[in-house]
Structures are given as C-alpha cells and as structure tokens.
Length: 259
Image (cartoon, rainbow, N blue to C red; front, side, top):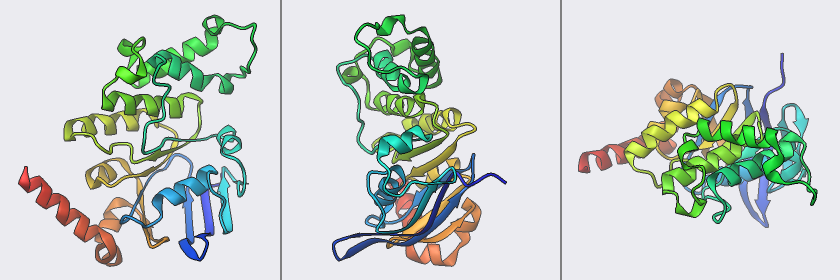
C-alpha cells in the first residue's frame, strides 16, 4: 500500500502562548480531493502554511509522500512534488500569460539559470507552457499581460502556475473567493479537470464548491480536525452541524433567497 500523499500526526502550532493548531491529525490518500472547511480563525491557512513549509510545526509530524517535511523550506517541499496557490494572486503582472507559465515549468524540466540560453529556444519548456495554457483555457490569451486579465482569468493563471511543474499534490487556498456564481461554476470544472489524477487539498468557504468538488471533507474547528469523511457523512454529523456547518448552510440559503 502506498504512503499517504499528505499526513499530519498530532500537529501543534503555537505563536508565543497562543496555540493555533491543537493536535491536528489527517491522512490524505493519493488522488483524493479533500476540502478543508471551518469557521474564520479555525487555523485553515496556518495548516496550509505548515504543510507547504512556510511555517514549521511546534510539535507533531508532517509527511508528504511518506517523507517527513518538518522544518523543510517551501522550495524543497515543492521539489518533492507539492505545489500551492494563495488567497491573493501572485503573478508576474508585466509578463504575458505564456511567459508566466513558462517561468513555472523551467525547474521541473531541468533548466537552470544560464545567461547564454534564450528562453525562446527551450522547446520543451515552450511546449509544456502551451499545454498548460490549453488546460486552463487561456491559450487565446497567451500574449496578454497578466495585469490586463480579468479577475477570474488571473485566478485561472494562478492555477496554471501551480500545476505547471507537474506536482502530484496541489494545495489551493480559497480558489473561488471573489468570483460570481457563474464564474465559480466554470472554475470548479476547471479545477476538476486540471487536478485529474492528482491529490488536491483546498480551503474553501463556498459549500456549493465543497460538496461539488471534494471526495472528502476535513472540518477544522479551533485548530482541531473534528471530522474527516465523505461530504454526505460530514453533512449529517451532529458535531459538525453544531460547530459550523448548520449555520453556514443557513446563511448561504438566506443569501440565495435574497437574490
């Protein structure tokens, strides 16, 4: 049996005397799509930062593809096959869509800095960038500067950069935040397509996205994973309803009625 793609064992994270993550444990199998939900302040972004190496745990173990990554730098974890996006787009705004993607594929193809090489001559990098552009449906916008894209297009480009290096484990932090309902529907389809066969962890507040995308849901409340199961089981879990889900679904139903 293969090792979990992402595994957390009794992970704690404190900032001074404030404990944010309080013994979180989670085991995500290769190819699973997992949504991490919970109220504001539950520690979701902190958990992502721990998994991706931006923070080191105070105690506990974090493993990616069976290898312990505690204290590793983000770039080392990335080279082990884990990539993540952020809540705020982090693009080269004055480069074209194509150039942004090409930058993201260089390392995975073995290219290092060399002043005598021209990027235009790197056929493998150019071909891979074109493939990613087609996957994220921005091939017709390839020569547009990233700063001139619509918000939804910028988010799609962010996804493209995240997957461009071929990582098998993808972390998406609130990928549909700020999108309209129609944009969200299209974007969920895009995420589903580009993460086919990959392991996906996503932090998401839109329950429609969560239930439409995730194989399993992890519910984080006050730094603890209080449930980790299928969407149907999580929806029916009394503890989850009491702690989080019931009020969120009720709020979204009210918001929908208001429109």
